[in-house]
Length: 394
View 1: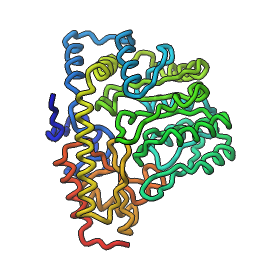
View 2: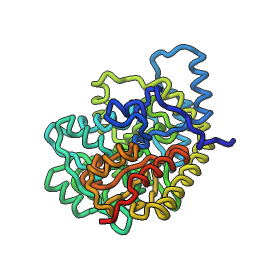
View 3: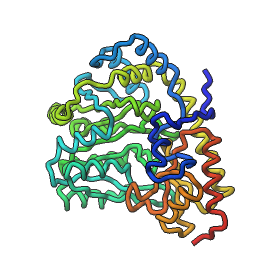
View 4: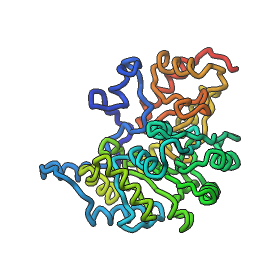
């Protein structure tokens, strides 16, 4: 079946955070929105069909997981990620950020330290601070166009701050790294050595570009499986974020019990009905759509790389290994970060995610979401090129 990912859908006035919050957040009404990480495409027809059937049934009561769902999820994880789990290890949450907050409360006390690797998805820091914990950062660094882990700094930060919990982003948002097995093993060994529990946010795991391979963190060793929480969701893969459904795999019974206790304190004890229906349909019948989507994303990546090389050579393209988010470096222009963001938003009228949202390491970077039509993507980059025209390098 052929899917048209270049068709343009008007998402205005559809309760879309990506577009309908532009003016309330001080952006121009005609801004092009390529910031928040959802897609501008309808989801898989297989998912829509299942949702329509549930709507036609007409009853939307309290919901629970069933055996067909578990079979579908198990098959997906085994076939796509070489990962197996037992049913009792699965804990659902309304989203991965919800799960992060639950883990912070379950495995640390107020005032204790939680480690993140910046620049990183900003809700990590938000959840740590909202729960009155200390944010400890170990900076990633860029070398030859590729972001790297400073393992010496990572371990020293753990020791110096008595870190209890590490939140791993894998694949990494925003720098689009797919960590190698060797890199993950080094992180795991350090955390085991210092009794640091690992929460692995693997929500982008289905977007990995060859020859890179995603490794589920808990598959590194039996010891790591007992010391980690693996969180993922069909929300990024199949554009289902609004259905509020994610899955967490926790092998260790003690960690699982503590995590569930914190989740349950919120009053959340049944998963989203439509989330269950959509997830099962995605895992059973969504792969053809996903494979076509990946081809479209690769085409968009190739387009942006070529465009920048030909028309905006001062904007440095960081080669993505995964995700549908590109990390672009504007530092060669020598424009201060705040001025750069103002230029892109108010002169180019394009809404991207400012790099410093993810940490100080993102100074003069911008994150762009390429999960859109190539027509809109080109329009956005044309606007940015126009706004930068005449600007000289530093």
